[in-house]
Length: 316
Length: 272
Image 1: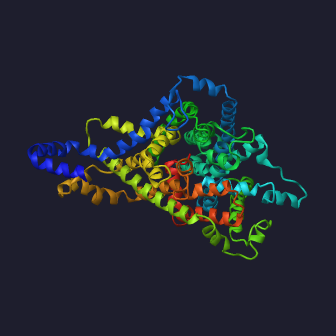
Image 2: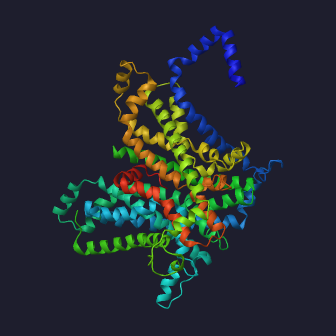
Image 3: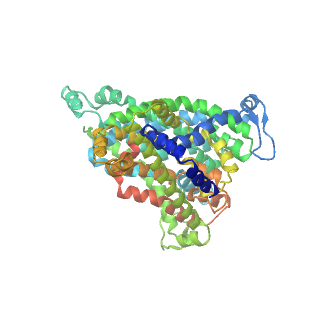
């Protein structure tokens, strides 16, 4: 309140100066900047500055406590992390998550989409059902599966018991746990990716297909020589989106279902960063891990934004 | 295009299997939410004596009501803010040519290439220094800028005839009134689509709330659910009731605006 009061009284004293200022700032040429100001300030404060600051923090050592000083250590964090077992496991798992996602989340939806597209409007119920997991939070999905897979009394175990079989404790073994998370993340995204392909297919002119049919082409020929080539841009887009998804979004099932274990079996680079920065409070390690993750993500994201731009253009 | 009969059989079989794999886990979860406690571990997916007890207990035995309020409040305020700032930004870019336009535009869209996860540590430190930790402010303010919204709205502004601005001007409407009276009504479908995406995304968000909340006072539903696991909460009936309630808003929107929701998600490709 004091500040406002002062401003008012000084405005009275320097009325001509203030009027000049108001004229200058109220001029039409400043108008666009007023509209942009909130966004620019927010992005500066919460995107660009933190981004640069992360790079700086990656060269320091600090435990997040205000009373301990931050120490500049240069590139030591990078050397120490990469020599670390956790990093090597996380990097290996990240690559497995990506590699496993390609057949499951990128290729598998293609035949599903082609089939749904061939049904026309008749496939609406299928589409709605497979879209459902997209709407659910990954927390909900992870908890449901955690409970279904519970080795004691979970539905999977009970179902197997009906046939006298015992259901393995899939989350208790590193490789099985990783593939379980991979399959659950497939469950979550496959419907969405299928819809992306259907959107890509919708732009294919059906006259071409008729023409090929008249020339005696079978299903396979149409698929191979017409649909697949026209679907290539969509496939590439889905691939990029899926890679980003596989790096970022599996954080939630990892955190809820295994916390990176057993024996680092399910952790990935992003989860490693989280643990360094916010579980053991090693800011330098966390930031250094983030910078390495950034290099990986930047390449992928750059391509994605390019494609997104083109993708939306096609729609119009 | 019609596929030949054998392919159609294969297709329907695969799709039915896929739909079952989606529906069975969800039905078991929802079914359990309505089970009395002595049936929770029964293999039957549905209750033999349905009850609402679980829904009562999740509210009486846990801070679920506060979690819900936090989710509703922070999601509402955050989405409103994101929409407002995205509209202002997209409007300025669509309407005027001004020095620095290209640079600022690159700055805004460039931010889309910096995922949240890469900026979290400094923002976390900033939030702690500002004493925002464990408050609604921490959940809302760092997330108000949504370059993706600007990107999407720009696509719609492009199809806007420039004359519409001039016409509003001639009618004596300033740029501010023109925005609210002429531009926004014409953007309604795009804004509705954007709102749906932002709402579902924010409502389901897990990572950021996990970092900056610490007590029930500010925990959102998603983080609250994790807290149940953390505390070895073993009332699975109530837990499933909580999951059902947490999923209800997004499913309700989907139920009423099925086509729009699916089209919007696809058009944006934001998921992922």
